[in-house]
Image (tube, rainbow, N blue to C red):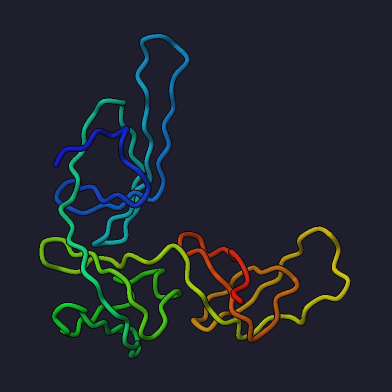
Length: 189
């Protein structure tokens, strides 16, 4: 299906040279000169190989939208570099290696439900929720009398990911983390 480049947004999956590419960043520039065409710039990631690509298009050009199937899966467990999921409709088990999962591994908890993206019958990526709630397992003690300015400190969460958190967060607390960039969102009560 052809899509106008001015309509693409972050997260969309395009088909370029037979491969699925996910848009990770997109911006448009409207030129000041009359008659000049609008430019759309995008950063893309190949969902099969993990390779990155920067692409520029003129406004009005079209690109192919990839035919991707989304299916519900549940993360069961990790065994070394292999992560095992269960398809929620067929109850079949599906194994993906750490390279296929990529950075998403830092946000996966056992029994967590999410969506798997399939292209031409093969799972190529995981579609994470925008935020996940994770427990802080290690961080420096809370600072008493911290200044009014937000001071950040590193905290290690249950998945092994290091997140910069405000100084008042203590070990054992649950925090909400943005899966797009790994930033602290808020304390979970």
